[in-house]
Image 1 (cartoon, rainbow, N blue to C red):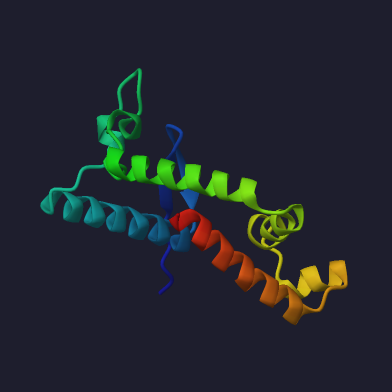
Image 2 (image 1 turned 180 degrees about the horizontal axis):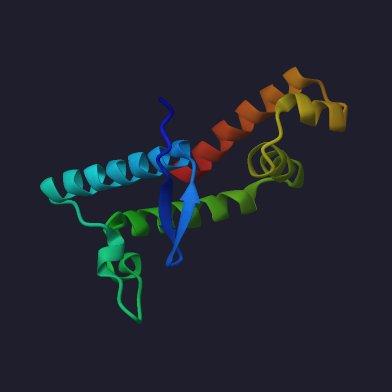
Length: 138
């Protein structure tokens, strides 16, 4: 005997007819959402959107605890050293740093563009990094 049951879902305040497949998929998704929400509640997790107000979103209210002042200060000192180090490099050395690290080109790509053998570029890169390390450590 064929199942003549009609399946409907509420969409935008109206009851719409849907297929059995759509109906089951929708309620499977709803059950999963409910299960996850109950699991979060059981484990004491709070959704950021539960903290939303008219003025701010929940994510904006919470302070960013992943950064601290000490890390920022150390980073700033390192950046200052790096800037001073870059000032001591030749124009060609700055070009290498720019191409290999800022523009993230491979040695092979840079070799093709400049006509300098890749092994020569690699050697120059290692010497340059050693030079920069020495400058930064002093």
